[in-house]
Length: 427
Ligand code: PMP
Figure 1 (cartoon, rainbow, N blue to C red):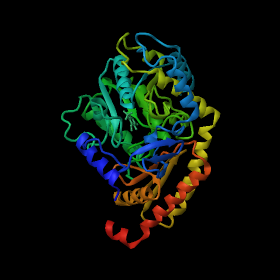
Figure 2: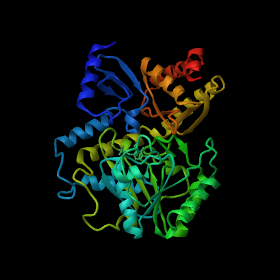
Figure 3: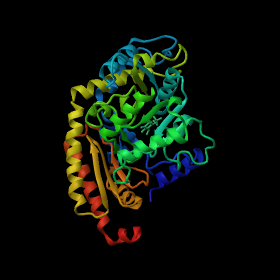
């Protein structure tokens, strides 16, 4: 028992609502690259990366230097009132880097949900239609529209009342779940015949790799067929890359892995390297649909976060983080594949670059591993429809020796499942 944290957790219970669920029972003091230290000096290897925000690690020196330099100049003017050049140059960089066909434009916001909300506003404005199709098992955020779009009721939508209308869910292809590409396509036809006619649909929104939903990678064929379907009916295709973006999958954007192009891409998380910034990039013609004043926000494209984002893109290029994502991901997958043959409870190992997941028979298995790892100084996150998946979101800048140390703890954690005690607990 730890009196300091017991006391603090009791105060936390009193001071803030239980709806903000918290994983760790300890409190951070400082963090550097892939290490977090708690208030009592205990170190943790961070395989959670602040939920996919820290592909460039905690406090990357270049990110910190860029933000410090910006702090000396100005911290806020509201871009819509007094613009700054760094916003324009960041938009130019993203327009050039993002896999959008033809000329592109970018607008910045603050959170992932805000980027998704704005992508829907832009799509509705451009098409003059209202409908939005998303997928079962998806996650798009906690604001009202993104909550409606999210394909999971508990804990995200349950007891939060009536959702905004015009949002319909189709099936995301899922090999283990028995949803083939044909079945997923057929589910969109069902939406068209049962819920909303295709000519009323503004956009189909999908995560190229479902994040919270279990790191399910979209089949290339499904994307291609979705694109053809969208083109046939004048529907926009939106890729939500809030979790997949900025080198995590071994390319700057997950959509870079595919020939298919989206009309709009949302991004957030690792774009800011720990500072809150999000964006929507898209075909210039589509992005220009809303009238002046229709897009924006007081803090949208905050100058400190914009400075951080410039540094993040520099670091990804200079430190070849896409290549590193592939190398680290391959090491982890090799280890997990080897464990799969020894541990019956593992049902799947899947990955795109360093977006790696290992799926277990039951949530209890994932929870047991997460707890074991935490006790041994490794921070892991779960995900998936049944919370039975462990996902890996370590900084791509993690030193090799520390990565190996993390893998060693992970291996012990997974092998701990073999004990009778756990089998009984799950049993
Ligand atoms: N879209 C996706 C794919 C996400 O993974 C998330 C966050 N997990 C969001 C949107 C929402 O982002 P935020 O929490 O920054 O609003």
